Image (cartoon, rainbow, N blue to C red):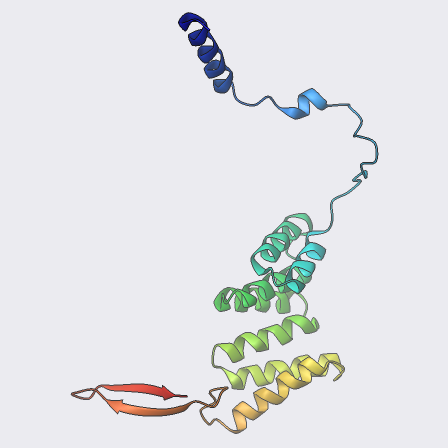
Length: 188
């Protein structure tokens, strides 16, 4: 290929790249899908997708799906509770608490929001309030859920026996490090 012809090819390719991609919708509008393609009549509910993602441990993706559900359905008690639960799993405890309290305001009989609010309260070191919240959840559920019963038992235990609970068998000791400074060490 001669140098002027090579420059012509390069210039043509550069101009083609500058025009950007052509929109497919205009080109393919009205064409039938390929044979065997399942027809999508309506999108899957964002809450349902979010619940499946939560079950799979994909909390960030679940949060996005719940936000999509919120845009479709509005701030319903289900949406608020789901958003709170996803934030709880992501460790965003303040956001989770706010959303779960809003869910309870929307429907005071919604048991999952009460239970998850209790979990947030336990995680933030408020076992007394968590105990009252779990009692409410337990009463609304009429004692049918083993998980709520266990959460209530733990909250009661924590309020009645406020001994330092480490959740493991570490032995702790305090070591002095100079003028009034101490270091807490753990030994296996």
